[in-house]
Every structure is written in structure tokens, then in C-alpha cells.
View 1 (cartoon, rainbow, N blue to C red):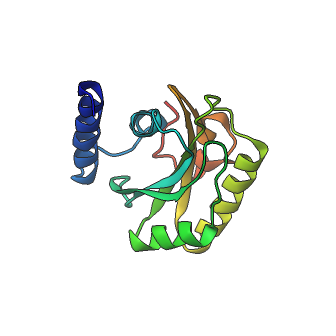
View 2: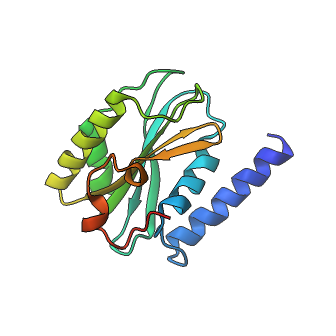
Length: 160
């Protein structure tokens, strides 16, 4: 690992510790985007995961749930629910990356997001956002209005 990658890994570890210790909450979409950008920007294959949060939006876990190839990923809703329950999450932000470099969500990304929102709702876990990372770009479903009216139900999450 080169010096730059060690520095990024150290910064991520510090941020994750602060989020877990409750000194910082994921109260803005931008904070979640920045955290995920640094975790995923150098990945060469698709990864799907979730940031699981407690009732005060403190990070409980950042878990990779599915690993794919350079352009394909199979996501099983059962595994997402299992992960949320394992961490006793009140809410979550799902994420995945596009190693090809285009952060624009596909139609299948949008469909999967709506399905995950409904499935997680059944077990009383709010889906706050779905963030796509591609290189140095991110796309937030919540900021783009693609996740529904999530901000009316979750006023604590700002769009900034």
C-alpha cells in the first residue's frame, strides 16, 4: 500500500471511529457521500453495502453486503434485511459503486432502491438514501428526489 492509500485508510478509520462514538452524526447527505467516496473510489469491482444508523443517526456499521464483478452485482433483499437486523439499525443508507466511472443511477438501480425501501419498511428500518459512487463523483437518490418524499418523513436529514 502506498503512502497516499495509507493516509486515506487512516482518515477513514478516524471518521468511522468518530461516527461510532457519537461525536459526529450523519445528519447531511454530503457527509455520507464524502465518507463513501473515500471508501469506494478506488474499488475495481461493484460493491453493494449499507451504512446502518441508530435512532440519532450515529453510525452503527458500514457493511459490504454483496461483491460483484466490474459491471454486475447480484443483491439479495434477504441479506440486506439480515444485515439491518444484525446491527439493530433504526435507519440505513444503502450504497454501491460504478467502477466504470458514471455515477448516474440505472433504471434497475432505481427499481432496486424502491424495493429495498419497501422491504426495510416491513422490519421498521427507514431507508434514508441510496448513494452511488463512481470515481470522484457521487449521486444521492435523496438529493435527486429519486427516493420519494423521504425528507418529509425524516426532517433531521438535510439535503446539503
